[in-house]
Length: 600
Image 1 (cartoon, rainbow, N blue to C red):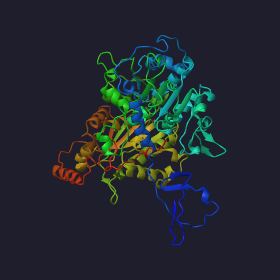
Image 2: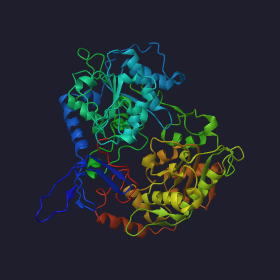
Image 3: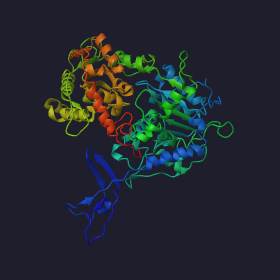
Image 4: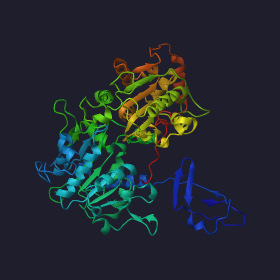
């Protein structure tokens, strides 16, 4: 913060000790000003780009060459040597996993280390329990390999905290440590995680313990970026025997390398026989890394390490007859989240029809007799709306008032039919509303929390989450409503050219449809959506099952191709593509973007 210059006074530069963002306000803590602050004092404020994450990624790539990690990052073989016999009798902490053959196999193969030096992959489709599996594998390594030291990571703080919380259920608090970045806010850390974190209560800040102190912990848990701090400490070669990365599909590849380069030495028959195990868990069929740089996308950084290995490495390819090689990868098959009808189409389109319904039937079928269903026992509603998409002033983001009205209508039906006709009560926190456009998200939030008096007055209504597909990845709700927004064919070529909205984006389509446990309601213009192959199949599915209502969706072939071509030409002349294209997030689309990854 720079105080306003005065002709006779020197400029004093202050660096805030902490910064937090609340909506559009930035709150800064400046302790040095406590005694000298004057009411209404004005400052010039400048913001600098946090280069730490990129520095860590560049260093990781350099270290990967120095430490000769080619057999970890570009694997081509396995030594076939085990740490623990594959047929070792195991007693799992979570006994329910013993009944799931795929989860049990993944744990056994990870514990055996038979894939080394190649990484072991857990392919976890929606609701199949990949995080539960990776947590149990960590516990088994601690139990059965006395000298093992484990680094457990994820791209975000929320995913990393979840790993820590689940490990705390069975591991001694003295054996694991949650390493946080300086920039985290203490109040946002779950209470149980705070107890094993690097917080100094006397100094009221996070501290980094000494290398000797950290060496005493069996499990260290941190985000991928902050793992770079551990690499800086230069632990002895072979100290970390195992590195686990959850949600690996969300991270750019150099982020994953941060947790490996300088920390995990490849398995070697002579010098590192019982170490060098890298485990990646994620789903390459869901949204990958979110990038802003077109140069980064052009050079392949939108492809995660997990997806690159599964798509381009022969060790991880699926055999049409025998499936995946269990020595290197396990695909989890039991879905514990969704009703079978909600799961059916994503299963066919993305998962080779291999997913099996294992959801709690009391929950998954809880809306099968809802009075507002079009067809009993089919908990999907497609409500067709021939609305009008609009934009405000110079904003390129779309909204659709008619769709907002339908969303509010169904929210009223959900929250006011509580306890009637056998339908259980539902809390607003169990409902989610998804839209791919920032303006639609904003207007739905404003309608729920401000304009609609009945909804506004309901208890816990602020816990009803409204957000983009990216914000819902990795989450689930009992009921999901989706507002697709687009109602005009005028911009269809633009959607295809610049990868906008739901259209022409199968991963975004997949994530949106697989968040719901019990009830899925989609609001959109069928005439527009049916021009996309995946949405067309979803529409046909709803129609065939008598789950469609609303506007007639007969095709309208009278499209103004000349107007569309002219719009695309105009956008191209503005140099928006490919330099205006940001993979799943576009500068033209202006979705509600996840916050830029800092030192998380």
